[in-house]
Image 1: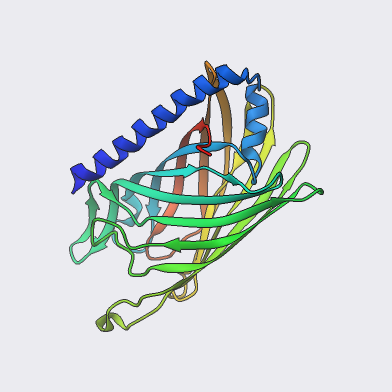
Image 2: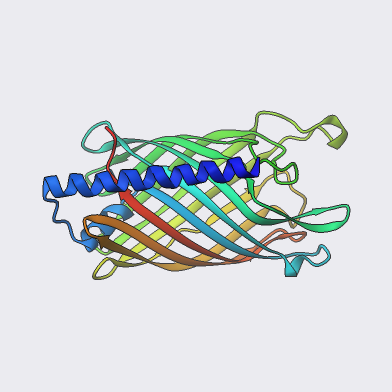
Length: 289
């Protein structure tokens, strides 16, 4: 199973390289002369028409009341292709799967903490429509889902979640600020022996970008969640974050690099993240339509 997972991600890398090679050919044909700074500004737009293949590498240090919680660390990669479908000059359709791959992830069981090896995580996805208004305000509305796809029982969520998604962003001359919020209700229940409970989780992401020169940006996009049915002290997970983006042209191929640091000002008392470093590589690829 684990070798199959790695093969799937290797296939994803090969697809990205094939698409980026096509991007170079297309740009040479079209004579695209956009600078790194111009591309960086377009990528920061919440309703952008640029396609990207995003590889998020996350290192997380944990804390909590469980024995040895403070010495636990996790490392994972998330793959998220974003290929907007233009519906009009100001309206786009987005279908964005998020596919996590855990290289090491601590879980707590009867024998204390154990580190799980390479495993596929719980895949999530959203389908949304974004519109840019004359005021440079961007509105996005759609649906969100999270699915029980992890290949290790200890990593697999108890619930399949579905619910609405809404986002608002404002574009300024200096950059962008915005907020994305989703709410998921469980469409299945865990077994009766565990109480036949349900889930109700609000999650989201606040984001900001400050444009600098030569493709550089100050940026942050931390994700947060609130588990309405969790025990007191374990409901809210909320980080503050800051980082930098840099768009670089490799020949005609633009690639955005991003590095962010998140510090969790709120985290579950029992076990939750305290520090997180996210490094992202995002090749810009041509839309297939």
